Length: 108
Image (cartoon, rainbow, N blue to C red; front, side, top):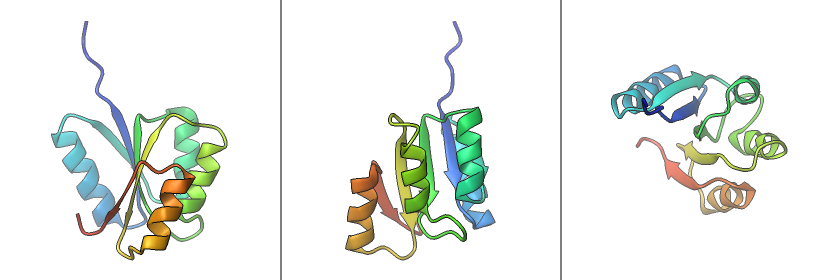
């Protein structure tokens, strides 16, 4: 029986970050796909719920924190890792309280 590769969704408004993370995850054996904003990511999650999500914190329209809140209204069992270039203790604590599994500064 073939083993299914875990799905990882990358959400970031920066194309270079999205493409780089997606390529890296694919090279590690994950099935990675990406969206440029939180709203598109929510729609993608409704179609195909990933095993994990790596999301930027600061995005136009819907922030990473707003994305977590909206996602957690419907889904409670997906690991979310937040990424940001503007890391503060306050935003890290807020992300974890909202359900993020971890919080990492950019660049990785």
